[in-house]
Image 1 (spheres, rainbow over the protein chains, first blue to last red):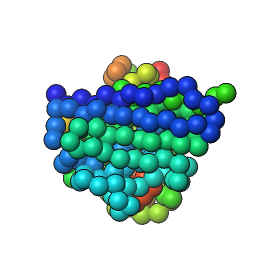
Image 2: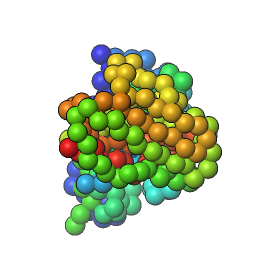
Image 3: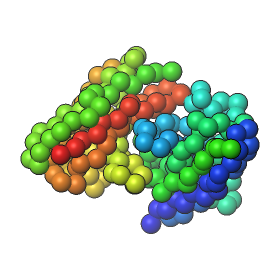
Length: 123
Length: 106
């Protein structure tokens, strides 16, 4: 069974940093691109970032929403089946539920989602 | 970034109704669009990918159409479990973008 389990959500002060993780199981993690999507309280979904399948976090393998570019870094550890999102310079508007999601084999859809982890940015 | 305009933002319907939701892209995105359903307190669920391909396990009352800039999701006969919020997502070009969502209510 495919499973994605996010962790690392917390209350953090504005300007602070936080690292989210997503533990994947039930599929060959290294073969699939992975995304982060977030949802602010009472709001719609916002796409955050993608990392293509493969071993590196080089620029050509990662992409970001304009709202997080330069502040967030997506990475993956295929040996540990783990996706990460390093967040820095956090703002109140980054408060949201953060979902990790697996892309389909050809990358054209998000076919499996985790349950989400809550990030609250507040003083 | 490509803007995805979804309409309506909400609608009221009854069990058995036919419902259509629209997404319009600010530029052509071929058929690189998916539709997702989200029930309250739950993660999104993929319904349709590549604009018109039904995800495995999704009931056939759901269908997607469109290409280029205009796309629709249709529920042919609304069921109680279909009351939820629906989102489109373009993954034609980075940054990917969601529509604003359509809440389907009784």
